[in-house]
Image (cartoon, rainbow, N blue to C red; front, side):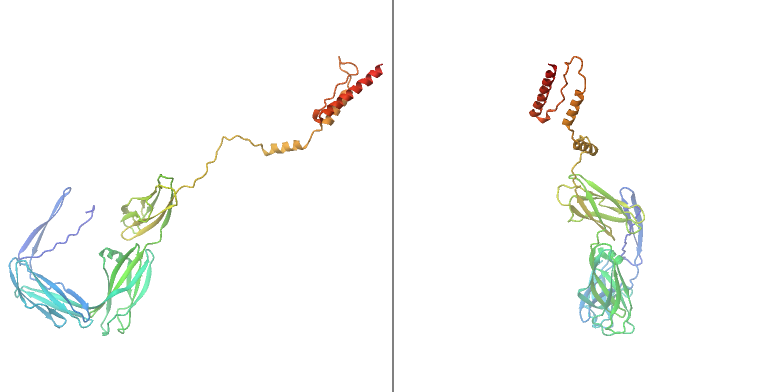
Length: 447
């Protein structure tokens, strides 16, 4: 048993003596905490009327059943069997005799049949007697019914998406309406595991319990509010107060809900990246949960924890960690993660991918091999202004010709101009010719 929890134990007592106290002991034992002992006592009393035994079939049909009687004593006994009924055509015993001998704690099988003629309820009683005081009475309750063999209604919706519909049901085979007839309904779940889901998600509201005519429909408002996916078969049964019932086969199907969220995880190859989030139960109580990825999900995903107790609404949620470990390059991986309790389901789409590759950029240490814009502008301005070297040389020649000879130089000697040789060989030869003619003129004046 879980801590601080309780356990219900059913005790069945079948006395084997009359007016004698019988006792026993019930023991609960655990190797760690010890054992508990409970003393019980019982006393056999004279038999009374037993619980009614229901039996049903369609109008005009015939069915049979078996009543089991057990000799409660440790000695052999002789019993007499007979039936009390108002109409032997509806109920009858399938026995060739009515006296039987039963051994100690022995069993006697008593067969009987039921054949309803109208859509009403019939009653009978099987009486088993050992003496005037030891008499067992077993009431029989015969119910005429109309049962459908097909699927009459199929309600389908997504989990957490309510569906409402009005049902207008005409009772087949119903002709004799009495002013005292009232109608009620019951929903029977075929699968016991889905009984709790149906009780919490399916609601019927009957608009009226009487009919003005046997051809009028009974009207019901149905609301289907599933919180998690499931599919189950049920029987929708309508009872008539004066006897008779109608069975309709109804299927309730809750499809997968919409995705609650999309989680994207990026991770390099062969490395694990994780994302965590917290989740609370939708009720103010703890709930056992299971967390898993569906079979069609990529195997690179993992969720922890896989089971546990989900924190109630209003408190700090239970932490979940989703991990992604890619093992190969290719398209993005997709998984479907489900967290499910007995009443609720949450669904998440997980997408795993690789980080986008970027070409690395040099962040420093490069040589500045480009001139600035200001320097380039200044250089262009200087290049546009060309120097006239010939003009400069002539200006220099005139300057030197006007100067007196320096000390140590012969009279009449003039310094040569700094003539550029950009003009080529002809320019140099011309300069030499001018110098020679200047010498001749000077010498002639000296003579």
